[in-house]
Amino acid sequence: MWVSDLMSPLALILALLPLQALADTPLTAAEFESHVLGKTVTYADSAGVYGIEEYLDHRMVRWSIAPNLCQYGTWYPQGDDICFVYEDAPDPSCWTFWMEGSTLTARQSDAAPGSELHEVDANDQGLPCPGPDVGV
Image (cartoon, rainbow, N blue to C red; front, side, top):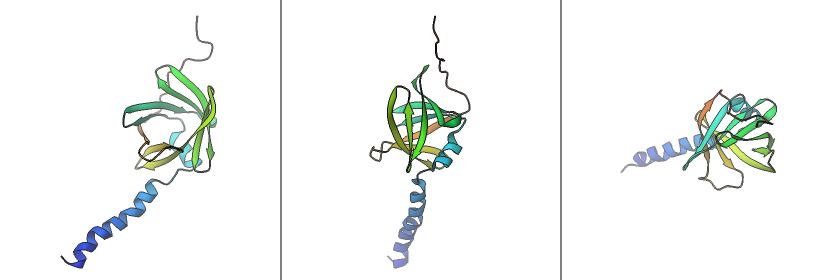
């Protein structure tokens, strides 16, 4: 085996390392907002659909983990994270978002690698959330 034969795989690995580093670069608040504003994004993990979030004007959101059950909230940047606060859960839930190709990937700030959520659908249809004071 020649030294040049060994260098080819090594050179390839070294060339790909910067691409991997870029793939995990957290999105800024402006980049995140540019990607999600006006969209309804479905997130999934290895077990299946995790939830659906609709991103509204003024950093407002609607989150659903079940049909017609929605939580309303807001998001804000905190360091490299995007934090969400919902009406029924005042403690923030913070996530790091980055792009993998053209899709969004997210991991809770205190979670271990391997627990990421991945964007599996994004569209401009709103969530079917009942409005306030709906009933008989």
